[in-house]
Image 1: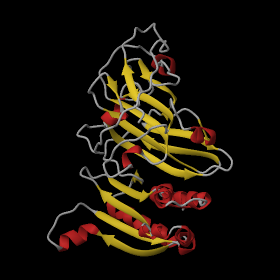
Image 2: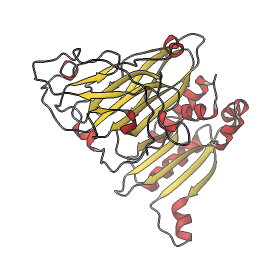
Image 3: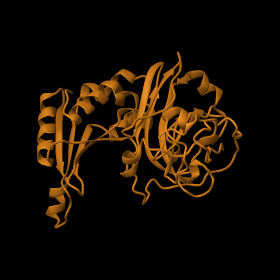
Image 4: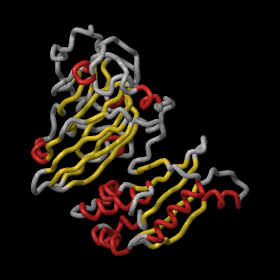
Length: 337
């Protein structure tokens, strides 16, 4: 398997060249990993945009000086590091029961950064499968100042391609780092037909739940549940049931912070998905989960439609999936569904 490794080197502020670093690719097996880490990664959002080191990337592709991309000094700094990559197929961590990361010939684009420098180096994957390369044309991965990671790409005619945007935090162990040293921060996945598309992920501190989209509500918990219930009733949906998990816990003498699940759907839409893959019925009707965290913030979460389509092998439903995604986002954020 391809080792996606990173080399960090200190440079003077006048030296903006990274081309002197050798490019090399190696084959190796990667160890498994867990998705949870004790590191407080909320610092990512606070620290993005500061000054840090210049980096060279040990892989075939174009490297970009952090000074050239971001400006500022090239002073050395010991910081948390991450790699974001657009890869063919599902997120590498989800492959196989062992959790082994396998990205051989799957990397389309990558970007390497730190908490202080969002972009240290970026480029194309060094050994992308020619079948993927013929179908996918990607812009560089972008790291925004608010911690959003995004990539825009096009899929060629007569092509159907599953792609994932993955973000890993890299450990501090060793000079040359690889994804086997990393912890998955976030991912976004979809199966795409010909046309222009995008994927978005974030650098965030909470544990990653693959395929789950979350937004923070501006309202208190009960007001959020009431707002969502009213929006579902007013829209082209049927509210199937409401599950008050906290009340169920209380009935058993147990404590649980406010947690309510709204189950709803539109059979005219969901049936088409089940006609292609009946197994998606395990994830339908649609759901919105509302919960209050330990510091009192209220969150709304829902399954990303493209994630469910990839999970169940649904293709040819891009327009329907986009409509569902827009409806869910509208409900969760308080916009029109």
